Length: 336
Image (tube, rainbow, N blue to C red; front, side, top):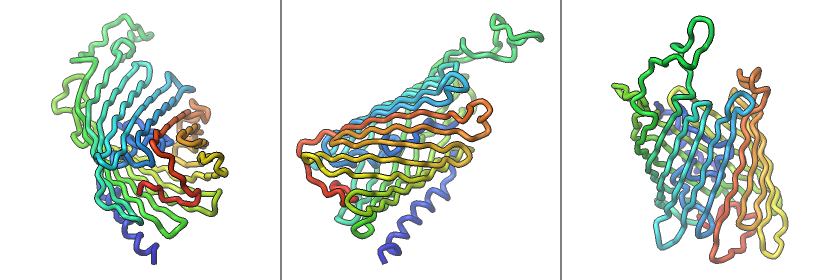
């Protein structure tokens, strides 16, 4: 009966993700659960504590060329007397041209439903973005003299500017529900680049808008006993012609409390459709959460990548005024 009651919620989120059509691809993390404000603005302030800080770094395609490096840092605040709000800063540097993207976003979230069994939240995010490129590092066909490439030749290309600035808007919905005493389901749907800002460095008319990005994630968490917990998830991104499907599991082993300090280790194995398998591992110690992952590439780039993909590292810390004792078998967080 519990499953039937909640099946309609899962189908609702899957249906939304299926019927919405999205319109270049943004950066993203394999360990998306450790970058919550990049996953869904509705996750702003959703944790047990007062202030949360998350930091992330991903380096990809180092074996092929100049690596693509992504950095993020965020902080969000949770106070029963205030609307949860947060700040997110992303920077992505890609390729020989040092194509750089900088994003600074503010977010907030509201509870629409909240009781002992479920919670429904909506979140909004908006801010400023800047993109820049080092044109001097680029090569063009006009610089080929018929025998070899000559960088001293003019490019014959005309750039209005080597940088562009624009605003961005996003929103998301988050739903979590208990399924009895030992199970929990979490669903995320978020839409990024709602305003589809112009991305052209050449003043193109009509403008070249950034594609809307639709992100969805469904997680099913099962607690076997006081020490073992399994988290299964399906993650999907749609942006323009690009689609990414990621699914896998994390196995959590909860150590016995030592001086009322939470201690937990976890291992994950995930498959990214037609692209890679990645393994992850992490540890939680009191208010600290550390994770590391590595992508093993098996796409058409294997001759160049030699199966090497991306390395990722994440660190989070939650400040708490009061330490709350939590049973390791309680899978639904206290803050629901």
